[in-house]
Image (cartoon, rainbow over all chains, first blue to last red):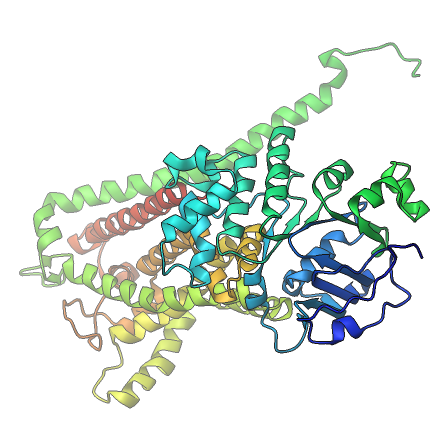
Length: 285
Length: 307
């Protein structure tokens, strides 16, 4: 192990088990523990029917930082992302073993309501998916279902659009359909929709993969800004993107294994794993 | 490569070309049969209706409140009692089929797991395949006796029993077409709402339902036109007494039931009673045709575009 190998850190708000759980054999290379973890994954396995999509994932996600999950197609990075806010619950055949702690609370405990969890952990999807409603109603939707529409909804909607760097472009057409926007604008609308109810964590599943380079760079700028207020976890198969915008990088390789997790600079300049180095330098994947 | 000389001429593919041409004409003539039949039906209806309206004024037909074509001394041809009978059955059955069918569709599309859906959907489709005369007997021998348990004075033939049985009959139509519309709403929209912390009920009612509204409304209209045109069940269940009354327990007669009554031998060809069949047939045709136009308009007006 190197100097920045696993650290033994006790986060004070943690209700115990997360920090007590020793890293197992599945511990990835690098430094899978961080000081200010919001989310702690411990031996997390995910199965789809008989297929195991994730094998004993152990890693921490730091607060108000951008954590990138990279790896080739089918490596389980999206599955891991979706297990954080329990979107995998919506897939009949998905099954989860192990623990995933959010502020020290295992989100897979019986008493956790996935609906309440998703109100704390927002999500932006690979393909822009605005509702067939007006731009305003799209952003207001989360406020309404979460009962946060009592105050000044208009102000909250405008703030969210502003933060998503979209307000200037749509200010005069808040009543027109969200589907009339361009792909890049739609994706920023979806980001505005996700941040309007003010979640703590934003999960992004390849949010720029369906967009052109200009729209992509706007999304990337936005992600970095969002990390000032939110914890961002972003899945990407674009390594340059991960290198540009993330603070921490987790490399998943085929078969659903987390191979290495560390500071983004370390991963891209001097990874411990030869396989990660091969992947980063484009030798496979 | 082939040693034969290159031949790209049309003659080289004579057989293929002939089959292709013949096939086109065969397919076209099959399509033509349907179109010609429709045109012929309209012509026959209009022709007979013209004869009828040369003896009965259009005003009397459309505004008269008494339908009594068999009184040879003083026959009356006010269509309103028959239209009333038809409307009572249609509205009554829609009041049953629309809520039950829509909720069934939501259940099947959003709540039921694959095992239940694969059992329930075929069952509903069997319901749609039962001959309508069987529904008529079901009304007479099952629904009416139940109504009579609560209201002993109700006669064998009554509008309520007919409305209930037609309502049951068209539930599969509402639920099946609505379910298709809801299932075609992309999962990305559901995920967007779930990701924002919406409950299943909110996703179903606030996202899926509005997004599939055009298909659902079209289902309602198709089901309603089916109820308007429904014949055998209402002939058996509702009775043969054309009258305008507010009581759902009264015997009534629908337009279709009257046509069965006259069409099964009661009136001689060329008599005024016989000719009234064409006027009624044309009226029914116009009613269902309007509904179908409305359904097409709604589909195009409220269709949502997805990428």
